[in-house]
Amino acid sequence: MPLVIFISIFTLLDFILLFSIGSHIGLLLTLILVISTGMLGLHLIRREGIMTFARARQRLERGEMPAEELLSGAALVFGGALLMAPGFLSDALGFMCLIPDGRRLLGKALSRLGMSLRSVTATYTHSGPQQTEGWHPSDDSGWHTANKQNHQGAPLEGEFIARGERRS
Image 1: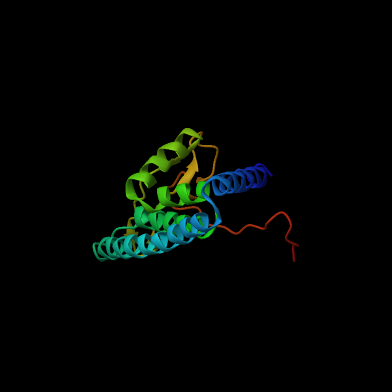
Image 2: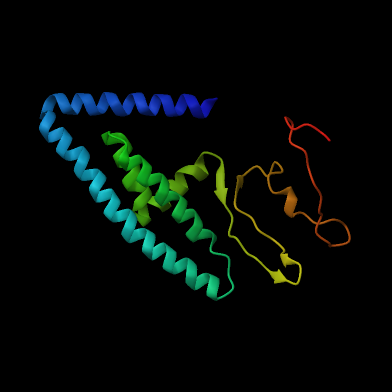
């Protein structure tokens, strides 16, 4: 629910800013700016996406998990979606997602909001990857308990049923 409220307020502010700037600079210049930021965003997505994909392949070839590259790819997709939306506020946030230093700045902002990114390490054995971690609340409230091990050192395995799912 808070996410829906945040998205609604963000969209409302984005349109208010777009219309207020548009009323000062005119319709034609506003349209040119909106279209040009979308085109520039597509160019940056393509360039950064190719570089991120190349880094991910290098890490996979070394046998490492490309977690940072996967998160960068997700930020690129999110930034691209924001750049396709008409509005100057969404364009600013979209460009922050596309520029590497901007992604780091957004990561720091998310960490202040209670999210942190642990480094992802993977150890491959005969049974597959042994440990993977990613985004989780910084208060360690059990989001990555699936990676915990039992008292004998073996990984815990099991199945679960979602709350809304019927038991058979």
